[in-house]
Length: 76
Image (cartoon, rainbow, N blue to C red; front, side, top):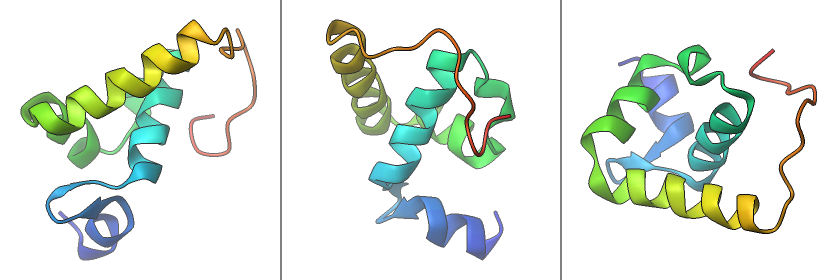
């Protein structure tokens, strides 16, 4: 993993809040495959981060704040 990617998305070997939010956006937009490999594989392997991603996703889903389509600065 490139150090710059690690520093940008990870802290203490877990996803930063920004990376969790990015993963949730990718789930909403059905574009998880566009995330960098390090984020995708980390969520697959790390129970703590996976729980964080899906907890945030459920909160957003329950609040009906999921829009069908919107432009995303990273995932388009």
